[in-house]
Length: 100
Image (cartoon, rainbow, N blue to C red):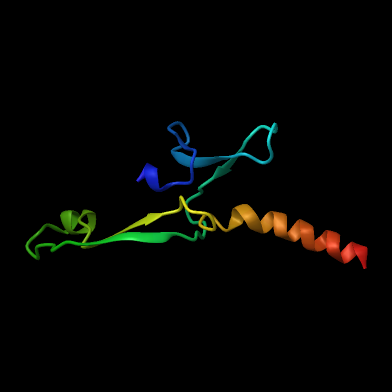
């Protein structure tokens, strides 16, 4: 659910994608960090939902029905798309290597 995304987050309907408005430093414009499908994320499990799926459903309905659903949250510090932070870490490592 949107309330479980980092705050403030926004959905871009034209692109069909969520982004987090990350404030770099005070007085600086915020940066859009996109939640691209397929990215590895850290999240907290908020709820597990189990649902009985009837065996007599059509094949199409079986594909659409979810027998198990995980509701997660990324609105806590330390939880997010890993790709958001790996770029910055690589740059810091390169700077450290140059200092030696």
